[in-house]
Image (cartoon, rainbow, N blue to C red; front, side, top):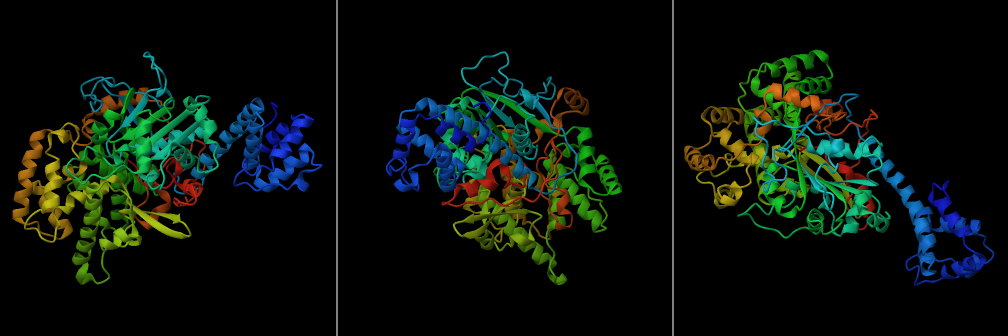
Length: 638
């Protein structure tokens, strides 16, 4: 029995182990339509004279190896041969674990865009008081920060817990949460992370899982495995051997968004909330990634939790990122020299997502032969420079301004509608509604094909959540009628002044972008770059909100990251044990698409091939998961 390694061998072992009378009774039960409902039955004449070997071959031919094992288990259970059932289930479950690991590895290896052999370390630190009643509390710059390694995230430590604690990995937009989460799953699959600790590590994209039409705990497992025949009952018997990684809690419908139209929870969102509250899979280990802005909403769901802050790149890693991004060494050198000569750019490159924006912008400017002379004073200036560079021109040069303005309006209205209704995935019909052509806007939008029934459709997302928030901010400034903000806009801005919202601690990116644009110098730059004039009355109305928002004293996104001085970061790097994390992002321009995909590089240093899009269909959950589980449908990073 110790040599059994496949479902076929396990099936043959179980049948050979039966005594002669039990084997005859077994064949009798194989004709029981009630017992094997929905399965193809063998006729009486087909069963007579079959030996265990012949019967095993016949069942495998009829059902396939895994389904044949399930048929045998059902019959043995009816015969009350429970010891054999347990042994057979255990053997097959071991084999399925191997299959799942291979499934995770193969999904990663099918993708293109790997940066050969280039890895970027990320800085992780524990919060100053993780046991505090306020999990949004971040360590202050003057405090000593303790680095932490991925390998020790689920160690019990000094404090003993009745159940595994929930690890909350928090970080501002673009700090590398998604990349690290996916890297953890891949390293587990290759045996280099948590060896012997978990039987299954599941990556759950909160953005994608809500596409599923049904929501049950078992359905979540089917989705994670990419297989609607996965042995979920056996998995649930040993929940303490499961690790779920819920990526992007902030992208679920957020109950803290007071004043907006509230929608009932999607069925799968309800399952995720129950998982976080430990009402299902209560003994599993759980890691949740989120932006700090959603911690106020997450906190009531948590019981025992450990909070880790992800800070992004060290100085050395920023240089390495440029070397990996640019194919031409001289171009990489020139680009990094530009960044080093601008304190704002250099600090901003600590955030992997913004580092990608800067690299993409510099590369495009260099390839167009344009001078890089912008005076960038904050993160909003960086996004303005990128967007103005990649707005598509018109074939008719006389109408360039109008075309750019039309596209800008469309992106802004799409982003605003999504933010106001907590939507991050859009269909082609949504784009047409806003006069957008997704195929020509790959600098700003990522496409995600999927199958529903017999039809192929396409989802679109902004390349990064920060782009959606930027266009949302700009939407207040490019309205057709600038005489007033309108009821919806007033509601959205007023929401940010609520006391409850103030407790979240972190200002939304949309408001941060808007406040920056309203600065006199940035406002003039904005009007020049986007060929529009913001009316004085609109500016005056927005300035009223600006003063109120400033009085609340929100923390701005990236406050902690940018407040750290270089020496503190260098000290942190000495203690960080994270390695082999390649941070890349879907390329915005087609010319260099193969070089700059933002995802995870396997520690085996294999090149990755193009991914298939997520397949979503009510009739075939397995197809859905072949592409969406483990985050493969997602190009953008949080």
